[in-house]
Amino acid sequence: MMIKQIEVKNFKTFSYQKIDLGSFNVLIGANASGKSNFLQIFKFISDIAHHGLNNAISMQGGLKYLRHTNIANQENLMLKIVIDSNHPLSYEFSLEFDETGFKIVRDKLAYAPNIEGSVGEFMRNHINGELKTTNTLGELMPDIFKNKHLLGTLKPNKLLLEQPLFKLIMAEMNENDIFNTLSIYDFDPKQPKKAAPIAGKIELEEDTSNLAIVLKNILVDKDKRRQFFNLLTYLLPFVEDVRIEEFTEKHLILSLKENHSNLYLPATFLSEGTINIISLIVALYFDEKPLFLMEEPEKNIYPCHFSKIVAMLKEVSDEKQIIVTTHHSEIVKYTAYENILFILRDKEGASKIIRPYEKEEVKLFLQSDGISIEDLYLDDLLGI
Image (cartoon, rainbow, N blue to C red; front, side, top):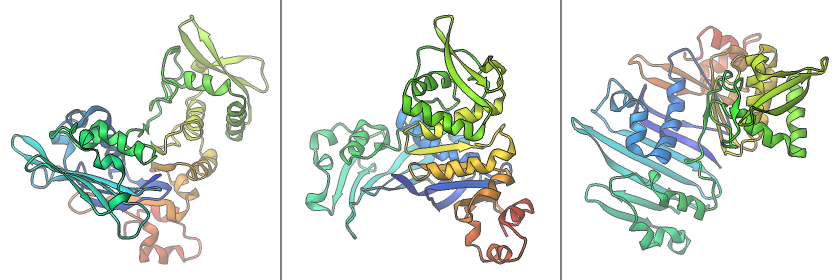
């Protein structure tokens, strides 16, 4: 399962954007071009699923900072996500604004099995508060779409995405609920340096504050332990052992032993780059979420490792969708042309995402001897 396409309108620096995604996506661009705002699209969707629409808007700073500043309430905010899986589906919603706030004017889930021309829609009409199901699949429509009792549990002032029925629909189709399992990693290497409470989640937090707990569960599994050390020594060959120790009975702390020493160094004395490499391995290879999102995975890491990091990201993209952002030219250097997305601002200040390799001007440059996509990026020529 992966996100095949994103369409967004009147969201932060995006006035309108429609972009196709692959299994491995590297979004590059200058500072303030909108890379973080692109990831905030996913954050907004995740917050709606977990906390509800009103809270999600508040977590973005309110309507003032959610919408494009030049559009504001002149146009609706619209988000649409197309999922490519065994049971392709799409979900979209639209919000209309006025002086008093907003209202939901579109809320649609469309389902289509692998039958050309067949689409089943579950759509709510918010104008009169009625629920409407468009069924062009007949008996192929999942039973959950026909369950009147479940449909009766829907609340008219909430999006489908924030209601229990949405999770049931995903489960009915035997799909991972990508909307409810989004994590946008933003590693804070200072967090794992501290002693972590012994009680906590075994899924890695976005800031990696519970890294010790997650690693403890990995290291007790023989196969996972072997895989972890193979990956770690691939990047850090001087590491001989990593262990998790109890500290004051209620906390855990990570410690590392180098192959030329008998001393275990507590995480407090490890470099931020070493901590980030450990966190990256755990997030990529041991997190079962179907989508990996991260800003600057190369942060605090020595550039000679970048080729290996890109290779790892590409490898994992066979199992889960990878979307990362960077402005580092070395990451661009080691990324295949077809995996690169470039974001820039247009004359009106709106963010636009393009695929540089599809532009004829860029292709002409790349056909010249000695010119690489990295060179064009450094010379700010990808947007020509």
